[in-house]
Length: 207
Image (cartoon, rainbow, N blue to C red):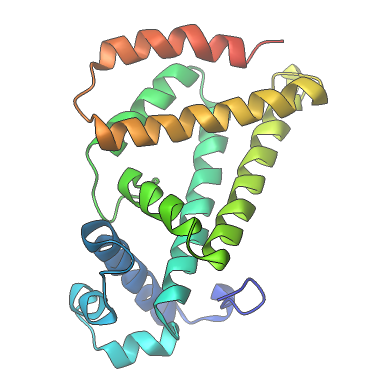
C-alpha cells in the first residue's frame, strides 16, 4: 500500500477504525512471534479473532499490513520525540523507553524493539518497506531538528542548522541503538546505562 493508496482513517467509522487497529495489533504480535515471512494471514486472523475475509476488507494483502504498521510505528516515534523534547530530564525519558523495550508486549504503544529489527531487515529485501522506513526516518530527523533549532525560550535548544543536522542524526542512532540493545540484552545494568547516557546526552543537546 503506497501513501497515495492508504486508507483515510478519518473517513472510517469508529467501528471500522477499531477493527483496523485490532488487525494491526494482532499482525504486530504475529510478526514479532514468527517474522514477516513466516506469519500468515491465517495467523493474523486467528490472533485478531476474526475471519481472514474480514481482514481483507481492510487490507488487500500482508504487505499492506506491514506498511500500515510501519506508518503506525512512525507516528508513535514522532510522539515519543515530542515527549522527549518536553521532558525536563531527557536521560530519564530515554531510560523509561529502554525499560519498556526490555519488556516487550505485542500491543505496546511505543516502538517494539523486536519489530524494529524485523522491519529493518525487511527493508533490505522489500523496496516498498525500505522506502516507507526511509520516509519515517526523514520525519523523525526533521522532528529532532525542529526541537534542537527552536529557541530556548520556546522550549528548544537553540542550535544552529548545521549542528542540529549532525546532532539529530546522532540522536536517532542513539535511540535505535537502545532499541537494539533492549532486544539483545534486556537485563543490561540500568545504572550503568543511565551513567553512560548522562555522559552522552548533555553533549548532544549542547552547542
